Image 1 (cartoon, rainbow, N blue to C red):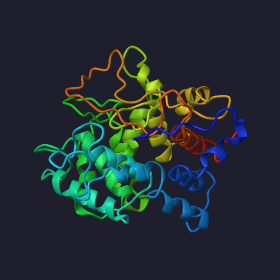
Image 2: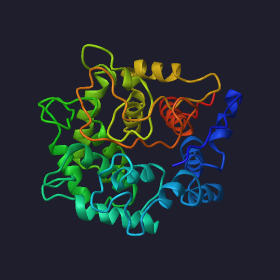
Image 3: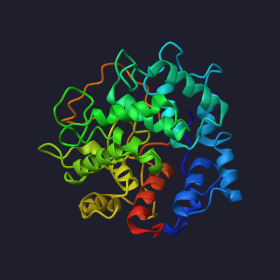
Image 4: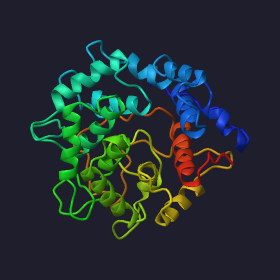
Length: 329
């Protein structure tokens, strides 16, 4: 995918909103209108921005690379190659706001559901369900309009049952959770509150406490630097912005234990009002305890080291949830 150069250079700080509302990236424009400016979805400008997501910008570019049969890169394997196969592109398209109302998204989702829903209740690429795949897939499929699909409902039950005694989750065999495994809480944050059962609510409470008691970044004996670099797409990796976005989306924006993480977020804001895309995954540092077992194809919407519309949108969304209004200045 081509990377479009940012147009923020030399803009005054109060022009960040105008930058986000530029029509070149309609997904950013759309979410800025509805999430930062509280415009109703029935608003004509909102509708026009949403319609354009599949017609130009990042969404159109990804859809343009899709095979007519509904997959990207490989029909034989929807997970490989990382990070350009169907699994990964669906995550991004759902983040950009596209749903099964678009026939290409519906075809991709149906293909994924048919091959990755497992008898044990979750999603996976082998015989059994896998945590990261289940969490990411549940979130994506809810955003794409499949919240009532029994395979998606089953995935949420699987995520609850996979929660550790300490309130966290883990991708690998472990009795304890880790901050790296954020996907279950992210899936719960995408699920409309009217769908929250008593078990979901309790799982969210335990999971949120797991993150908050660790200030969203205190794990292990030393600071893990990749968590303090902001990324997109995040795939199955964690960073501080991921944690802030998920926890505030779940309604914990007023918890005082967010202060250390919010301090980092505010300090990373540039004088022009934007945030950088710091790095592109895989971004592993000392102490990762994870080794990539296969080659990957890095994928990004924007260029690392430059002001990022998507990261800026996410950061402002977090601050709005905390402060109650779009914090432009």
